[in-house]
Image 1 (tube, rainbow, N blue to C red):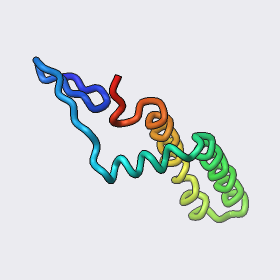
Image 2 (image 1 turned 90 degrees about the horizontal axis):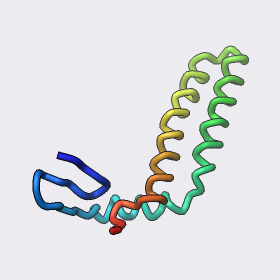
Image 3 (image 1 turned 135 degrees about the horizontal axis):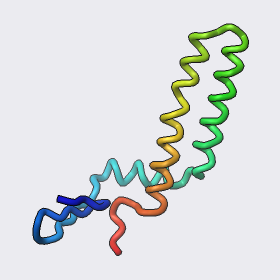
Image 4 (image 1 turned 45 degrees about the horizontal axis):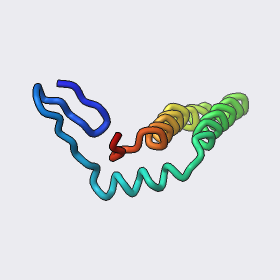
Length: 90
């Protein structure tokens, strides 16, 4: 079984499915945000975390540092939605 962005090959014919209205709405809204926003937000949270650490606020530093990975993942998701889309037919 192989899966490719909205298409599933189950040993024979190709089946397609479409995203629901909630996923479609989220993708339409997030596609409006430039991908750089997520990158700069992640870099900003790294900087803020470093500042908190230097100030001796270890818990705040770790809390803000935990934002970096999700922000980068949101950026990757945003880029994939812009390039591929969920319901784009080729």
